[in-house]
Length: 393
Image (cartoon, rainbow, N blue to C red):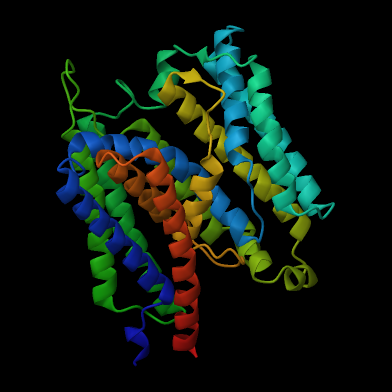
Protein backbone atom coordinates (compact mmCIF):
# COMPACT_ATOMS: atom_id res chain seq x y z
CA UNK A 1 0.00 0.00 0.00
CA UNK A 2 1.43 3.46 -0.89
CA UNK A 3 2.74 5.49 2.03
CA UNK A 4 0.16 8.23 1.64
CA UNK A 5 -2.67 5.72 1.98
CA UNK A 6 -1.67 4.51 5.44
CA UNK A 7 -4.10 5.10 8.29
CA UNK A 8 -2.62 4.54 11.75
CA UNK A 9 -4.06 2.04 14.19
CA UNK A 10 -4.73 4.93 16.58
CA UNK A 11 -6.77 6.84 13.98
CA UNK A 12 -8.76 3.71 13.22
CA UNK A 13 -9.40 3.01 16.89
CA UNK A 14 -10.63 6.54 17.62
CA UNK A 15 -12.85 6.36 14.53
CA UNK A 16 -14.35 3.10 15.79
CA UNK A 17 -15.04 4.69 19.19
CA UNK A 18 -16.73 7.68 17.57
CA UNK A 19 -18.90 5.31 15.55
CA UNK A 20 -19.79 3.39 18.73
CA UNK A 21 -20.88 6.64 20.39
CA UNK A 22 -23.15 7.51 17.46
CA UNK A 23 -24.62 4.01 17.46
CA UNK A 24 -25.26 4.14 21.23
CA UNK A 25 -27.00 7.50 20.94
CA UNK A 26 -29.26 6.28 18.13
CA UNK A 27 -30.13 3.00 19.86
CA UNK A 28 -30.94 4.67 23.19
CA UNK A 29 -33.03 7.33 21.43
CA UNK A 30 -35.04 4.72 19.54
CA UNK A 31 -35.64 2.75 22.75
CA UNK A 32 -36.36 5.69 25.05
CA UNK A 33 -37.57 8.39 22.67
CA UNK A 34 -35.81 11.09 24.70
CA UNK A 35 -32.05 10.45 24.60
CA UNK A 36 -31.26 12.94 21.82
CA UNK A 37 -33.46 15.72 23.18
CA UNK A 38 -31.77 19.05 24.01
CA UNK A 39 -32.62 18.71 27.71
CA UNK A 40 -31.04 15.27 28.07
CA UNK A 41 -27.92 16.10 26.05
CA UNK A 42 -27.44 19.35 27.97
CA UNK A 43 -27.60 17.52 31.30
CA UNK A 44 -25.51 14.67 29.93
CA UNK A 45 -22.74 17.08 28.96
CA UNK A 46 -22.66 18.56 32.47
CA UNK A 47 -22.56 15.13 34.09
CA UNK A 48 -19.74 13.94 31.83
CA UNK A 49 -17.57 16.98 32.52
CA UNK A 50 -16.54 15.91 36.04
CA UNK A 51 -15.57 12.38 34.96
CA UNK A 52 -13.87 13.77 31.84
CA UNK A 53 -11.74 16.27 33.77
CA UNK A 54 -10.27 13.61 36.06
CA UNK A 55 -10.03 11.00 33.27
CA UNK A 56 -7.62 13.18 31.26
CA UNK A 57 -5.13 13.08 34.14
CA UNK A 58 -5.70 9.49 35.26
CA UNK A 59 -5.05 8.43 31.66
CA UNK A 60 -1.53 9.87 31.85
CA UNK A 61 -0.96 8.24 35.24
CA UNK A 62 -1.82 4.87 33.69
CA UNK A 63 0.34 5.63 30.64
CA UNK A 64 3.27 6.02 33.06
CA UNK A 65 2.49 2.55 34.50
CA UNK A 66 0.86 3.75 37.70
CA UNK A 67 -2.67 3.98 39.07
CA UNK A 68 -4.61 6.13 41.53
CA UNK A 69 -7.55 4.49 43.28
CA UNK A 70 -8.06 7.40 45.67
CA UNK A 71 -9.26 10.11 43.28
CA UNK A 72 -12.91 9.76 44.32
CA UNK A 73 -12.12 9.92 48.03
CA UNK A 74 -9.71 12.84 47.58
CA UNK A 75 -12.32 14.68 45.54
CA UNK A 76 -14.87 14.12 48.31
CA UNK A 77 -12.46 15.32 51.00
CA UNK A 78 -11.42 18.41 49.03
CA UNK A 79 -15.01 19.20 48.04
CA UNK A 80 -16.30 19.00 51.61
CA UNK A 81 -13.42 21.22 52.79
CA UNK A 82 -14.22 23.87 50.16
CA UNK A 83 -17.92 23.86 51.09
CA UNK A 84 -17.15 23.77 54.85
CA UNK A 85 -14.90 26.83 54.64
CA UNK A 86 -17.60 28.75 52.76
CA UNK A 87 -20.60 27.71 54.85
CA UNK A 88 -19.25 27.19 58.36
CA UNK A 89 -16.28 29.59 58.32
CA UNK A 90 -17.64 32.32 56.07
CA UNK A 91 -14.74 32.24 53.58
CA UNK A 92 -15.03 33.61 50.05
CA UNK A 93 -15.12 30.83 47.48
CA UNK A 94 -11.73 31.72 45.96
CA UNK A 95 -9.58 31.28 49.12
CA UNK A 96 -11.73 28.29 50.06
CA UNK A 97 -10.97 26.69 46.69
CA UNK A 98 -7.26 27.51 47.07
CA UNK A 99 -7.30 25.81 50.47
CA UNK A 100 -8.84 22.76 48.83
CA UNK A 101 -6.12 22.87 46.18
CA UNK A 102 -3.42 23.00 48.84
CA UNK A 103 -4.91 19.94 50.55
CA UNK A 104 -5.04 18.06 47.24
CA UNK A 105 -1.42 18.99 46.47
CA UNK A 106 -0.28 17.75 49.88
CA UNK A 107 -2.06 14.46 49.24
CA UNK A 108 -0.59 14.26 45.74
CA UNK A 109 2.87 14.97 47.14
CA UNK A 110 2.40 12.24 49.74
CA UNK A 111 1.26 9.65 47.22
CA UNK A 112 3.82 10.68 44.61
CA UNK A 113 6.74 10.64 47.06
CA UNK A 114 5.86 7.19 48.41
CA UNK A 115 5.49 5.86 44.87
CA UNK A 116 8.38 7.58 43.11
CA UNK A 117 11.03 7.86 45.80
CA UNK A 118 10.31 4.96 48.17
CA UNK A 119 9.17 2.58 45.46
CA UNK A 120 5.88 1.62 47.13
CA UNK A 121 3.45 0.39 44.43
CA UNK A 122 0.96 3.12 43.59
CA UNK A 123 -1.86 0.57 43.78
CA UNK A 124 -1.14 -0.02 47.48
CA UNK A 125 -0.53 3.65 48.31
CA UNK A 126 -3.72 4.90 46.70
CA UNK A 127 -5.78 1.96 47.94
CA UNK A 128 -4.94 3.15 51.45
CA UNK A 129 -5.80 6.67 50.34
CA UNK A 130 -9.18 5.50 49.07
CA UNK A 131 -10.11 4.42 52.60
CA UNK A 132 -8.32 7.18 54.54
CA UNK A 133 -9.56 10.23 52.65
CA UNK A 134 -13.13 8.99 52.47
CA UNK A 135 -12.95 8.91 56.25
CA UNK A 136 -11.35 12.37 56.24
CA UNK A 137 -14.31 13.68 54.23
CA UNK A 138 -16.53 12.73 57.18
CA UNK A 139 -14.17 14.26 59.72
CA UNK A 140 -13.83 17.65 57.99
CA UNK A 141 -17.44 18.68 58.65
CA UNK A 142 -18.39 16.07 61.24
CA UNK A 143 -20.46 14.22 58.65
CA UNK A 144 -22.76 17.19 57.96
CA UNK A 145 -23.74 18.44 54.51
CA UNK A 146 -22.32 21.90 53.80
CA UNK A 147 -24.54 24.02 51.48
CA UNK A 148 -23.02 26.77 49.32
CA UNK A 149 -24.83 29.83 48.01
CA UNK A 150 -22.33 32.11 46.26
CA UNK A 151 -23.87 32.71 42.78
CA UNK A 152 -20.51 33.03 41.03
CA UNK A 153 -19.29 29.77 42.52
CA UNK A 154 -22.56 27.99 41.67
CA UNK A 155 -22.24 29.12 38.05
CA UNK A 156 -19.10 26.95 37.77
CA UNK A 157 -21.31 23.90 38.16
CA UNK A 158 -23.85 24.87 35.50
CA UNK A 159 -27.43 25.12 36.62
CA UNK A 160 -29.71 28.11 36.02
CA UNK A 161 -27.03 30.70 35.33
CA UNK A 162 -24.07 28.46 34.59
CA UNK A 163 -24.08 28.65 30.78
CA UNK A 164 -22.60 30.98 28.16
CA UNK A 165 -25.82 31.89 26.36
CA UNK A 166 -26.40 31.62 22.58
CA UNK A 167 -24.16 34.50 21.40
CA UNK A 168 -21.04 33.46 23.29
CA UNK A 169 -21.69 29.79 22.55
CA UNK A 170 -21.81 30.31 18.77
CA UNK A 171 -18.76 32.60 18.92
CA UNK A 172 -16.82 29.95 20.84
CA UNK A 173 -18.02 27.25 18.46
CA UNK A 174 -16.83 29.23 15.44
CA UNK A 175 -13.45 29.90 17.06
CA UNK A 176 -12.90 26.25 17.97
CA UNK A 177 -13.97 25.15 14.48
CA UNK A 178 -11.29 27.41 13.00
CA UNK A 179 -8.73 26.00 15.45
CA UNK A 180 -9.64 22.42 14.47
CA UNK A 181 -9.20 23.15 10.76
CA UNK A 182 -5.93 25.04 11.38
CA UNK A 183 -4.58 22.22 13.53
CA UNK A 184 -5.29 19.55 10.90
CA UNK A 185 -3.78 21.64 8.09
CA UNK A 186 -0.68 22.63 10.10
CA UNK A 187 -0.01 19.06 11.24
CA UNK A 188 -0.33 17.80 7.68
CA UNK A 189 2.09 20.45 6.42
CA UNK A 190 4.53 19.76 9.24
CA UNK A 191 4.55 16.01 8.60
CA UNK A 192 5.02 16.57 4.88
CA UNK A 193 7.86 19.05 5.41
CA UNK A 194 9.73 16.57 7.60
CA UNK A 195 9.16 13.62 5.29
CA UNK A 196 6.80 11.71 7.57
CA UNK A 197 4.04 9.44 6.38
CA UNK A 198 0.86 11.31 5.45
CA UNK A 199 -2.67 10.15 6.05
CA UNK A 200 -5.01 10.17 3.05
CA UNK A 201 -6.30 13.68 2.28
CA UNK A 202 -9.87 12.40 2.26
CA UNK A 203 -9.39 11.02 5.77
CA UNK A 204 -8.19 14.38 7.13
CA UNK A 205 -11.03 16.21 5.39
CA UNK A 206 -13.56 13.72 6.74
CA UNK A 207 -12.01 13.90 10.22
CA UNK A 208 -12.09 17.70 10.24
CA UNK A 209 -15.67 17.79 8.97
CA UNK A 210 -16.67 15.26 11.64
CA UNK A 211 -15.14 17.24 14.52
CA UNK A 212 -16.51 20.56 13.29
CA UNK A 213 -19.91 19.02 12.63
CA UNK A 214 -20.12 17.46 16.10
CA UNK A 215 -18.97 20.71 17.72
CA UNK A 216 -21.49 22.89 15.90
CA UNK A 217 -24.26 20.33 16.45
CA UNK A 218 -23.49 20.41 20.18
CA UNK A 219 -23.63 24.20 20.20
CA UNK A 220 -26.95 24.10 18.34
CA UNK A 221 -28.40 21.57 20.78
CA UNK A 222 -27.37 23.55 23.87
CA UNK A 223 -28.74 26.73 22.30
CA UNK A 224 -32.03 24.93 21.71
CA UNK A 225 -32.44 24.18 25.43
CA UNK A 226 -34.27 26.91 27.32
CA UNK A 227 -35.37 26.82 30.94
CA UNK A 228 -38.82 28.03 31.95
CA UNK A 229 -38.81 31.66 32.97
CA UNK A 230 -35.56 32.55 31.19
CA UNK A 231 -35.48 35.03 28.32
CA UNK A 232 -32.84 33.17 26.30
CA UNK A 233 -31.51 29.65 25.79
CA UNK A 234 -28.77 28.20 27.93
CA UNK A 235 -25.97 27.63 25.44
CA UNK A 236 -22.80 25.73 26.37
CA UNK A 237 -22.67 24.85 30.10
CA UNK A 238 -19.75 26.28 32.07
CA UNK A 239 -18.61 22.79 33.27
CA UNK A 240 -18.19 21.77 29.63
CA UNK A 241 -16.14 24.91 28.96
CA UNK A 242 -13.90 24.01 31.91
CA UNK A 243 -13.60 20.42 30.65
CA UNK A 244 -12.73 21.67 27.17
CA UNK A 245 -10.03 23.97 28.58
CA UNK A 246 -8.57 21.05 30.56
CA UNK A 247 -8.53 18.81 27.48
CA UNK A 248 -6.81 21.47 25.35
CA UNK A 249 -4.26 22.13 28.09
CA UNK A 250 -3.52 18.43 28.60
CA UNK A 251 -3.25 17.82 24.85
CA UNK A 252 -0.73 20.67 24.61
CA UNK A 253 1.18 19.22 27.57
CA UNK A 254 1.36 15.78 25.95
CA UNK A 255 2.25 16.88 22.43
CA UNK A 256 4.31 20.02 22.89
CA UNK A 257 6.28 19.67 26.13
CA UNK A 258 9.23 17.62 27.31
CA UNK A 259 7.21 16.51 30.33
CA UNK A 260 4.59 14.92 28.07
CA UNK A 261 7.22 13.04 26.08
CA UNK A 262 8.83 11.85 29.29
CA UNK A 263 5.53 10.33 30.47
CA UNK A 264 5.27 8.12 27.38
CA UNK A 265 8.96 7.22 27.52
CA UNK A 266 8.60 6.11 31.14
CA UNK A 267 5.48 4.11 30.32
CA UNK A 268 7.20 2.42 27.40
CA UNK A 269 10.27 1.34 29.39
CA UNK A 270 11.06 2.90 32.79
CA UNK A 271 14.56 1.37 32.96
CA UNK A 272 15.51 2.63 29.50
CA UNK A 273 14.06 6.06 30.32
CA UNK A 274 16.26 6.24 33.42
CA UNK A 275 19.35 5.18 31.47
CA UNK A 276 18.91 7.96 28.88
CA UNK A 277 18.74 10.61 31.59
CA UNK A 278 15.01 11.12 32.10
CA UNK A 279 14.32 12.10 35.75
CA UNK A 280 11.79 9.32 36.26
CA UNK A 281 11.12 9.97 39.95
CA UNK A 282 10.57 13.68 39.46
CA UNK A 283 8.25 13.13 36.50
CA UNK A 284 6.13 10.61 38.44
CA UNK A 285 5.90 13.02 41.39
CA UNK A 286 4.82 15.87 39.09
CA UNK A 287 2.25 13.56 37.51
CA UNK A 288 0.58 12.94 40.88
CA UNK A 289 0.62 16.68 41.59
CA UNK A 290 -1.00 17.34 38.20
CA UNK A 291 -3.69 14.80 39.04
CA UNK A 292 -4.25 16.60 42.36
CA UNK A 293 -4.86 19.89 40.53
CA UNK A 294 -7.46 18.37 38.22
CA UNK A 295 -9.16 16.52 41.09
CA UNK A 296 -9.55 19.93 42.77
CA UNK A 297 -11.07 21.38 39.59
CA UNK A 298 -13.49 18.45 39.44
CA UNK A 299 -14.34 18.91 43.13
CA UNK A 300 -15.16 22.60 42.59
CA UNK A 301 -17.43 21.77 39.63
CA UNK A 302 -19.15 18.96 41.56
CA UNK A 303 -19.79 21.02 44.69
CA UNK A 304 -21.06 23.94 42.60
CA UNK A 305 -23.34 21.63 40.62
CA UNK A 306 -24.78 19.99 43.75
CA UNK A 307 -24.99 23.32 45.64
CA UNK A 308 -23.36 21.56 48.60
CA UNK A 309 -20.41 19.54 49.81
CA UNK A 310 -21.47 16.05 50.90
CA UNK A 311 -19.56 13.12 52.35
CA UNK A 312 -20.61 10.93 49.43
CA UNK A 313 -19.10 13.29 46.84
CA UNK A 314 -16.90 11.38 44.41
CA UNK A 315 -18.11 7.92 45.47
CA UNK A 316 -17.04 5.36 42.83
CA UNK A 317 -15.36 8.14 40.84
CA UNK A 318 -12.15 6.09 40.64
CA UNK A 319 -14.03 3.30 38.86
CA UNK A 320 -15.58 5.63 36.30
CA UNK A 321 -12.40 7.54 35.43
CA UNK A 322 -10.28 4.39 35.14
CA UNK A 323 -13.00 2.81 33.01
CA UNK A 324 -13.11 5.94 30.82
CA UNK A 325 -9.33 5.82 30.34
CA UNK A 326 -9.29 2.10 29.51
CA UNK A 327 -12.29 2.30 27.17
CA UNK A 328 -10.55 5.30 25.56
CA UNK A 329 -7.59 3.14 24.59
CA UNK A 330 -5.11 3.63 27.43
CA UNK A 331 -3.09 0.43 27.86
CA UNK A 332 -3.00 -0.82 31.45
CA UNK A 333 0.54 -2.00 30.75
CA UNK A 334 1.50 1.63 30.11
CA UNK A 335 3.16 3.48 27.26
CA UNK A 336 0.16 4.28 25.07
CA UNK A 337 -3.07 6.27 25.22
CA UNK A 338 -4.39 9.68 24.23
CA UNK A 339 -6.22 12.60 25.81
CA UNK A 340 -8.86 12.45 23.07
CA UNK A 341 -9.35 8.78 23.86
CA UNK A 342 -10.12 9.64 27.49
CA UNK A 343 -12.74 12.14 26.28
CA UNK A 344 -14.43 9.50 24.12
CA UNK A 345 -14.17 6.97 26.94
CA UNK A 346 -15.85 9.35 29.39
CA UNK A 347 -18.64 9.93 26.86
CA UNK A 348 -19.12 6.19 26.36
CA UNK A 349 -19.45 5.64 30.12
CA UNK A 350 -21.90 8.52 30.56
CA UNK A 351 -23.92 7.64 27.44
CA UNK A 352 -24.31 4.14 28.82
CA UNK A 353 -25.26 5.36 32.31
CA UNK A 354 -27.75 7.94 31.00
CA UNK A 355 -29.28 5.62 28.43
CA UNK A 356 -29.86 2.83 30.94
CA UNK A 357 -31.34 5.34 33.38
CA UNK A 358 -33.79 6.58 30.74
CA UNK A 359 -34.79 2.97 30.11
CA UNK A 360 -35.54 2.65 33.84
CA UNK A 361 -32.91 -0.05 34.37
CA UNK A 362 -32.26 -0.69 38.07
CA UNK A 363 -29.02 0.52 39.64
CA UNK A 364 -27.84 -3.04 40.28
CA UNK A 365 -28.33 -4.02 36.65
CA UNK A 366 -26.62 -0.79 35.51
CA UNK A 367 -23.56 -1.60 37.62
CA UNK A 368 -23.41 -5.13 36.18
CA UNK A 369 -23.65 -3.84 32.61
CA UNK A 370 -21.05 -1.08 33.07
CA UNK A 371 -18.65 -3.53 34.72
CA UNK A 372 -19.00 -5.99 31.86
CA UNK A 373 -18.54 -3.19 29.33
CA UNK A 374 -15.23 -2.38 31.02
CA UNK A 375 -14.13 -6.02 30.73
CA UNK A 376 -15.21 -6.06 27.08
CA UNK A 377 -13.19 -2.88 26.49
CA UNK A 378 -10.05 -4.50 27.93
CA UNK A 379 -10.61 -7.63 25.82
CA UNK A 380 -11.08 -5.45 22.74
CA UNK A 381 -7.89 -3.55 23.63
CA UNK A 382 -5.86 -6.76 23.87
CA UNK A 383 -7.23 -8.18 20.61
CA UNK A 384 -6.93 -4.84 18.79
CA UNK A 385 -3.31 -4.33 19.83
CA UNK A 386 -2.51 -7.88 18.79
CA UNK A 387 -4.16 -7.31 15.42
CA UNK A 388 -2.47 -3.93 14.87
CA UNK A 389 0.90 -5.44 15.85
CA UNK A 390 0.45 -8.21 13.28
CA UNK A 391 -0.64 -5.60 10.73
CA UNK A 392 2.50 -3.55 11.38
CA UNK A 393 4.66 -6.68 11.08
